[in-house]
Image 1 (cartoon, one colour):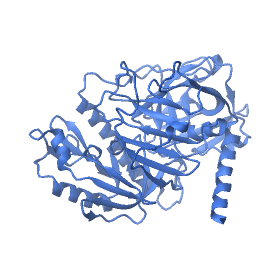
Image 2: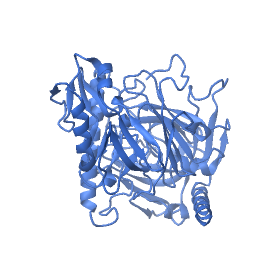
Image 3: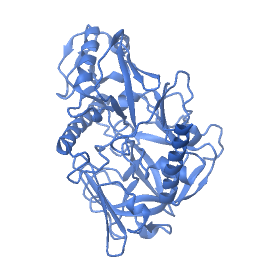
Image 4: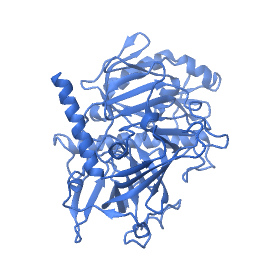
Length: 474
């Protein structure tokens, strides 16, 4: 009983802190929450980064290469901070590696400015690119293609700045905060690949339009509107940021779910369902009651308190391929991250997985299109469907007893016509760097309940789970 009471007190404290940080009020069009379309940066024709001259395999290869770069950046980060016990040398507590894979629309201010921001389950701050002086365009907006939207605070009637002496400013967990001459809370967020965003911590009205496929039977698309939402008004970025901003979906106090939970009755929960890259249907992000994962066979596991507050981290209790149980690292934790395409594993776990998978696949090995993804097979004679029947399932045993099954579509990707490559790569420093990437998560409904501190996984067909209109497309 004492443990239950302590847990309840802890949750109440977290919710109270989030409420104090947000200071939000909200209008919710429907009581069951809302849904937002997730746009893949490479595959979707709705993305400004979509290159129609590339084949689907070229686009997948580009996404996979971002993952190998992410693994290298994580290795450099952990090497640089080894033995410090904390992110040293000015490296942010949030160590997601941009660029990210999925985008979502958000409406900032009144009247609203519609912006296309990256969605990131590995960080907690929502920030958008702002005019540096309230009138001039962001310096990078004029230099880099494709053209982007820059938010102008002077044109919004609801824009406010966070005072540097406030509790909200002191609660910020990025690289650091400081005061400017007008007592505004200035922030810096650094990332492990050297990318950085900085600006003024602000408050603004956010408006979300319900996705076309999210509300069954609705005559009008409802909206959710939140006033005094804490966000970063970024006046300077460097490195890999190419969108209008970033929506932090992680586990920190400034995340979208935590602030919406404090401002509304929908709770601190969200879920998403990622369609395979070759399917011409959007992916979806759900918040509120729609985030409940109730499909048959759903596996629930506790969310762990991570070394990085924003990370959505779970524990592996076992990994099985066929009848063989594979050895686990000493602290088998893995971050669930939609922003990384491939799955990153430490050598201790990756090597036996590769050995068991390759032992079962009796096809000719071929040279990979990318040296960072070394294991590839010629499937031109058998086809992708037959190949999927050859590859054994990988069973991930989670703390709490649940099991997540990775099929061939979760462990292999086609990087060239007739060439299937293993979507598992090595992260070379520390088991805390293991990441379950978006390929491993596709065709799963994955939900996070930050009040109950749980993550839930269910195998579904994401393309048919939501009734998108006939004209919806990637």
